[in-house]
Length: 472
Image 1 (cartoon, helix red, strand yellow):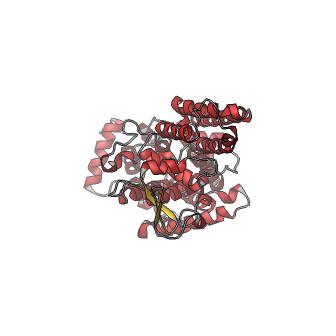
Image 2 (cartoon, rainbow, N blue to C red):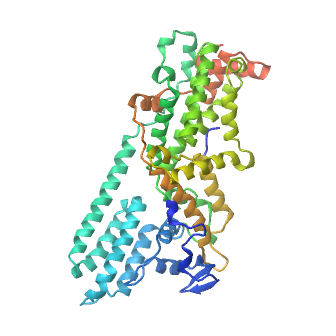
Image 3 (spheres, helix red, strand yellow):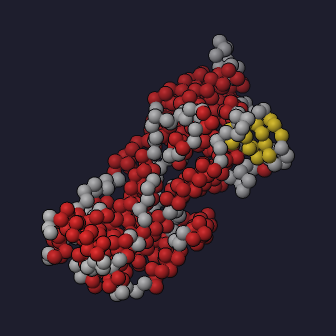
């Protein structure tokens, strides 16, 4: 039913590259390691572990994991402020005379950290304070090497371009039509020329599956990794510690994607319930079954699940006379693939297969992996709910955030795939703006297609005809 609301190369199966730490439980600088993997530490120790020095640079996996999870404890601008302050102290950047030899060793490392931050979490730098801290740090090291000025300008230019692209892309996405036209039910008794339907826009299942993949990848591209953390920040009190995003949840792209899934569910159901004739309704069902199969073959599991959910909505599933005209074997196979039994065991197996194909792919076509998004969100939610953010001693539970980073990091890799299919603006526009029914509208259209079977349905039909069509 409609929803309510890593780069994996960074990680070895155990989290970090095993050769970097000794394989035993020990403590180094306030960091607790278990079998070579960082498992917990105080927030201060984790911040210190992020900060490069003349002869140290944090692992890429650590940077991603900490920048992703740290916002549960400290806002990004405050984190960057503390990082910069510690760098100034440790590298003596406030001294009247700077140690140029040392700063030439340190400079490239802090620039690399700032670059990785801006590339992976660009939305953090929409805040002026973040840009201020970044510029201040580079201004302090620039007198030691003129090249730092050029690198800062390049970094800021790249960041601004990325933010502009993301902003432009969000504005360029066809807005989902808020208009829901239940009165279109009246068209069922009028000439078909009054309305458009999906088969008049696109009658090739493979083409529609490709265009759905376009929509999915376009919308996914705007979801920042931090949104997965911020979506549940209010769910965990952090043992009394104030959550940093208590006043605002920055999850608009994630929420917009969920709305798209819901729209696709209702669009499928509307397209099936709208035709006046049983033969036409069966034709639409068979068309969407073929579209769903093509989505599965492409690796677009989110559209696949939305289509199946739309066909399983009660107003559609009750159309027994219509379904009797449908060749359902292919539909049952798809339902089996997305069966929730065993915590979606079949789907998870297919997803692993698609992920493996993506890793060994030679083309963007083979790299496509679009997960069933609602289940991904639920997995992250249960990970968040099932483990405390802090241990009883007050340490950050870093082992939990390693697992979170693995899940989010894999998704980030998938969303960066460029869609290999040619875009059809007419189909894309139709998918976003075609009128859809509310649940009541779907039931009315369903009853108008195949009469109610019991008194409860008859009473509801009469009520809906009165409220929606003004008829008795």
